[in-house]
Length: 385
Ligand SMILES: Cc1ncc(COP(=O)(O)O)c(C=O)c1O
Image (cartoon, rainbow, N blue to C red; front, side):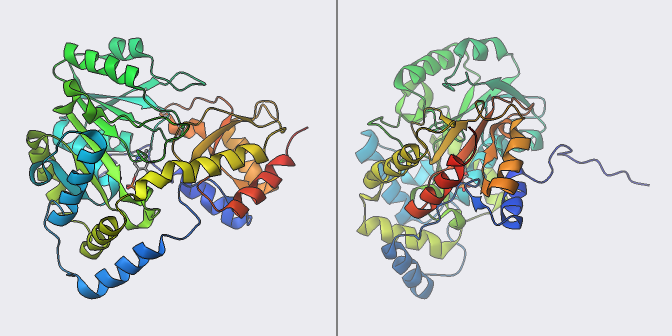
């Protein structure tokens, strides 16, 4: 008899599904998953309606609609002051998750090692395991969640093929600074076998006057990097699952070999709608930092004076709250209790580690309507003391 051997034996229901189901069961407010509860821009909705009627409903070109890629390249130049070629360097994907998966499959061979910095987005490890490679996990420094470069140097072996970074970072809200990118550039100079996968899906959600630095901004990293973006995050349409990858022509060639057999292409009307929207509202991204910063500040103001201790949040729409003054229970138990008894769902940070690290912090998504944040804060205020 055949005995089925799972390629992902440790993967079960994700904590996001568990917490959302628990939130629903207990009619709790759901600040666990990372999606907005406000509607998309009216103009984008109009563009979508128009695209559904006017655009093709057949396969888009494998690399994505040329007009959309050209627009991305033009906007890239404005933001970063150097050119990327839309034809050979940009590939539209079905969300950033697909782009991360494709990049890993394109470069990682069985037995290779891939360094990831934890806590991290949950798709990285399964994608590495599917490539028959080994994830090497390095913790970010608690509570700043900055990178300890010595730990990366210590972890590199002849088998190390790639490093995955994420800035601004989900779940921690930390960002990779210019100085840290310079250190990474130095490290890459020393290890010519390394590639970088730079998850930059929250590039436009950055606060306090900080500037987003892309790995591609650094010449020593540029030709060895897959940088990954998501319109789902930047346009408040996570359900559209349209993202893209920017890489050198050589890396893009390999990336597309995978992409073409994972999805071939991504939804044509959605790509048209995004292009039409961007053309009419090219500065949409300039409003995002302040838009989300106001939400972060409101949430912080509302929970001021409570026993919840917020950690620094420089980007993304997530904030970590330290509950160690309220309870010493482990974060999974505490998050479940909070949902069941206090009616507010969050995500415990230990689940973002391969081997759970419990620093007694929970992640709350503040990318929500003002009234949602007010109601959430009311619930949080009642906890503790
Ligand atoms: C850090 C990070 N990377 C990638 C993604 C996936 O983006 P997409 O929805 O475009 O696949 C997310 C979504 O939550 C994320 O937080």
